[in-house]
Structures are given as structure tokens and as C-alpha cells.
Amino acid sequence: MSDQKTTHFGFQTVDEDQKAGMVHGVFTNVASKYDIMNDVMSMGIHRIWKDAMMDWLAPRPGTKLLDVAGGTGDVAFRYLKRAPGAHATVCDMTEGMLIEGRKRAEAEQMAGSLDWVVGDAMALPFEANSFDVYTISFGIRNVTRIPDALSEAFRVLKPGGRLMVLEFSQIPNELMQKAYDLYSFNVIPKMGKVIANDSESYQYLVESIRQFPDQERFASMIRTAGFEQVSYRNLTMGIAALHSGWKI
Image (tube, rainbow, N blue to C red; front, side, top):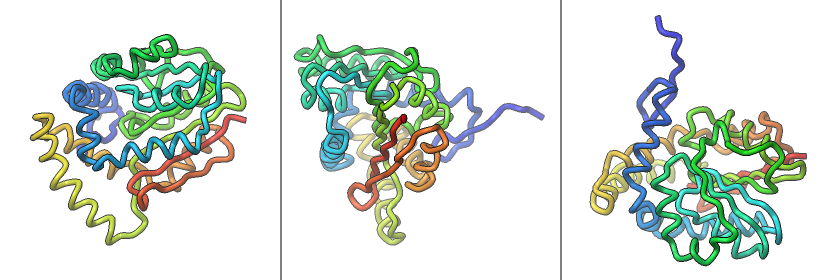
């Protein structure tokens, strides 16, 4: 009998050491169409969610942001626009996503305030107590071991630093959740086929949302990692949620 630990990849059960490669494959496949698909899938609402994230974060001038699974730079650009003299490091395991981010006009305008680093959320290539803010948007559900990623977030933040996670979540109303599931499972993979010529990657992304802990369970995981003053806010009835915690 094997002692290999397993995890989920969407609704499949896979060996833990396989998941990172499979997730890497998904995001390599969709990198060039990722931003367009985000707009189409959410009808542009992901932009409002990211702005809500910035409103709650209230970026301060001169601070250092680490945006993990930051891909094409969406969150880092928003942060830098609100915080004069701040610096953002975008860290992602998929180089293809970072390459797409560097091509964006905002990346050229902010080049002096931005670093792009290939790295794993469960073993970040940064020293302890390095950053004022750690963000991760629609990325933590793809991590093989979420507690490891949260522990790493705690390690690299300075004392007084803040964690903020934007992630798809669960709608508290069962009937509305069923309606949303119908849309997600029937429409989003088809959109992926038309726009990115890849329905399987988007099937995985929909399944991975259903596997992610609900708001209270995830808040508990953040507390277990050492964060204090942990709270969350639902966005669009709970389709997504923002979780905040402090390293005190």
C-alpha cells in the first residue's frame, strides 16, 4: 500500500506531488486569454471585486506588496496606482502568466516599482519579515496544501503586516447556489472552448471552486496559521469573498 498523500484536482483525486504540475499546465494553457476570460466569465464583476479589495486594503505610500499567484499583474497594478512610492513583487508558479503581465501597458509604466518572480506559494523564495502586505486573488484554491501557503504568507510578512485573500466562495442561499452551479458547469467550460480553445482547463477551474472551504472554514485556517483580527466580507452574495488577517 502506498503512503503517497492525495489531494483534489477539481473533482479528481490525484497524488499531492502531481497537482502542482497539473495546475501549472492549466495556467500555461490559458495564460494568453486569462484576462479576457475573467471579464467574460464574471461579466466584468471581477474588476469590481478587485477594487473592493483595494478599498479594504487602503494601500499606503511606500509599502512593499507581495502578490502571490499574481499572474498578469491585475492586483499589483491597482495597488501601485493607489500607493505612491510603493513597490510590488508579483510571484507566480507559471512563467507564461508573468510574461503576459509584463506585456501589459501598466507594466511598462510601472516597471521601476515592479518585480516579477517565478515561485511556489508553499515555499516562497523570500526572506522572513520582508513585506507589508500579502495578497492572493483566485489563486489559493489551486495550491496543493493551503495551510502551507498560509504559513508562508505569515512568515514573509513583517510584524504588523496584512494578509488579504480574494477567492471564489459559497453562496449562503442554497437555491441561489444551485442556480450559480448550473451556470458555472454548463456555460463556463463552453466559453473556455470558444475563447481560449480549452474547455478542460475551465472545467477544472469550476470544479476547484466547489472544493474550496466555505467562508468560516477558511477564516479558521487563516487563524490557525497565526493571523489575528481575521474577518471576511462576501462579494456578490458570496460568489466571492475577501478574507483579511494581520500578523501581530
